[in-house]
Image 1 (tube, helix red, strand yellow):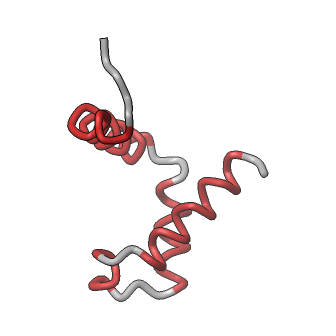
Image 2 (tube, helix red, strand yellow):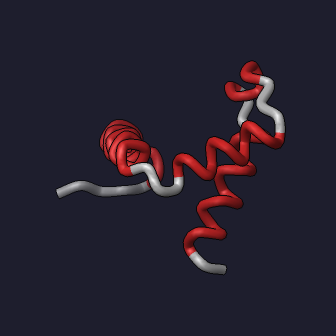
Length: 68
């Protein structure tokens, strides 16, 4: 699977199944619009990087990660 396809599949799954996202009542068209916009949006990736970095710093030890 190529990276673009993996990205699209992952976010489609998250947007369709995310508990917190269910309040948004996203339809298939909205999900596709989001994915199409996000996959080439550097701001989206910057925010995603920030989230992952913060999450790993805060919770990485719970996943057995050791930081030097």
